[in-house]
Image (cartoon, rainbow, N blue to C red; front, side, top):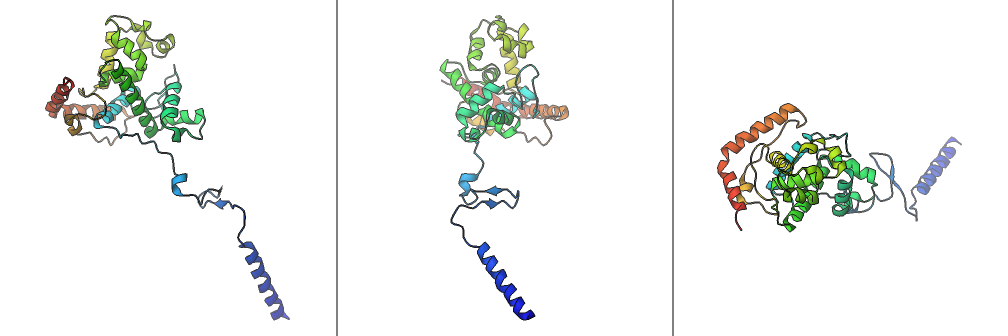
Length: 275
């Protein structure tokens, strides 16, 4: 009797297991081993489920990378969560909300897809994303300057990044001693109180100092850099740029590098005078 009962148990178990593994004619949800959550697109090709690409095309030149490094130091000192309490500016490159949303939605549709404005704006504190957006914005500013016969020098691009291309052009074309309060909006002056006492000449000089901090860079950021700029070595930063000691070390390292590469700077300047 016991043997007969055991045989029945085995037969019943095999029947249940077979029923449980029978293929379903409908779509099944697959549980993720990592999260335990179901994923109905787990069987899709990897190309359809990978993260959106944000790499700019073409890739940044040596001159552009150097400009972006200095721009970040000027804007935030390299602080990831830097915030201007007087405006919506946030992140390493201090993007205000309207500018960041505009550049991302026009140039990085894959990144913006499926995200609301709040989620897109949160990416301002992502170093890689904000740097890419800063590069795209800088290239647009370079084109806007060129259309008005203004050279896309680091100083002019720094001014355009801060003020926007349209306002930057007004500053560049203004009388040197004209007060910039008549050029910027009231809201911009409130968000940047130092503008209240500045002339056009002083703001242009300030932009030049911030763009050329640690040495003079005069190559125009328009596509390909002169050979002299491409050959200039870069400094590997292995400390935290949020720390004053790290920024001081970097400034000294750049000064030493520029002292050794004087001929390269001269060659870069000469290339700007070529027709």
